[in-house]
Length: 169
Image 1 (cartoon, one colour):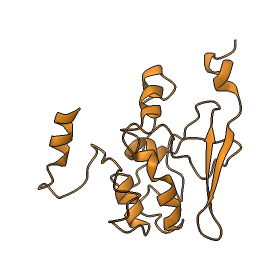
Image 2 (image 1 turned 135 degrees about the vertical axis):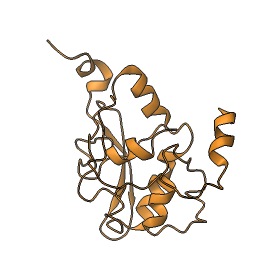
Image 3 (image 1 turned 45 degrees about the vertical axis):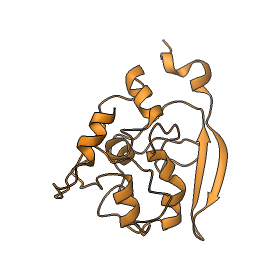
């Protein structure tokens, strides 16, 4: 028996639609289409892990920041998956995808289940925190529109943005 998501348009191989250089040895590759594949646990050098900073240049995080914008449709892929078999990053699903429209729709359709975990690793609270930890200046315009995650290990209780955002939904 063939699985329902292995037929039709979702079964096609992902197409590379954009490649941007990020430093001398890195690229940010944007793909479109293909099946919904995602990682269940952050990999050893996942940039969402607090113990894996500065593996990638700051420019890579500027290029990928739009994945954490409100109602974004592009997703943050696992760098270990590669462009030929892209998979959504587990760290992104845990901390950066809450406001991503594609991820939200894939949760609703069952393409993404609630089976992603942190593997016991401390993760950055959201995309902005991850980008700053990896060298993006806090005032960089690329990360300004990044939405905060409702997940929080932050000790700053004076931040009322979470309450205001809840009222705006």
